[in-house]
Image (cartoon, rainbow, N blue to C red; front, top):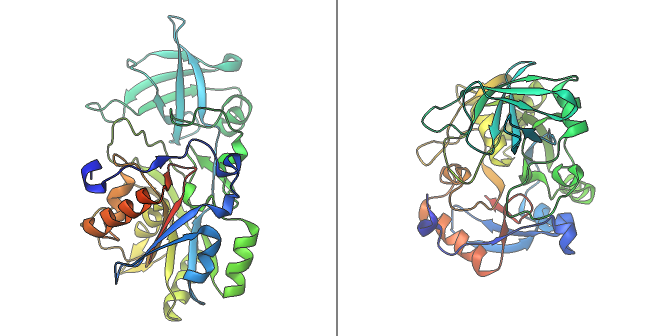
Length: 332
């Protein structure tokens, strides 16, 4: 997937819509129908009108951590350290925002220390196994000393609440599972009136740098018995299962047994692309992604390249915005 395939670039969302004078649930929404190739332009508030009674939305309830720390090298140089994925109480995957060496130790706020143990993928040493010595649990330490991860297109600091969805419950994501960000109580109320149900799964998002696209990182997930049963019931009743975000698709596809989603938990390194037949979801609500993002590989499991290219051209023509504070794309 590259820029040539997707045609014109979308605009970057450099701030939350609320900071741009737009309600959180009023961002633009492009609706793409796979069977006909038809495209519709709407607002996220219109979501219930595109769904049917008995449909089920599956959302990710992982909460975003303030996972960016300022680290000090022995030389006195400062660098950002993005805490990504928990291996155990002391060992985490982390992304130093700069070249580091195995064994290098960093000083962190409040007397804490971090040591870059080894790169996860030596040919591409972006993520490192990193040992932390902290005075608190990681969650509490980050809450007191970290800030939300932000990349260069976000030029201002925004509070952690701007990086949370209304479903956030289980702390653990380095980056926001942003497809669910536009949901608000009024949208959820309208969905319930429409007869559309909502189920939750958990997948803790790691870090996904845009500078050097690579395979999605290994991530922790959990699909509960309640969620698996809701999916079964929806299918038996003739409804559709709509995944809210690529993280949800990854969790559901990692929980398949004999073609059915079952309760499961653990680690997933599943890569979903055009070769993958998606069986856990019938549709997808997702954000818009820049051409280098690996999230686009998953979209090709729902749409062929020609239709995906057409959808992005439509979005670009209408001034849609991408990244975590951007607009959304409903694929049915």
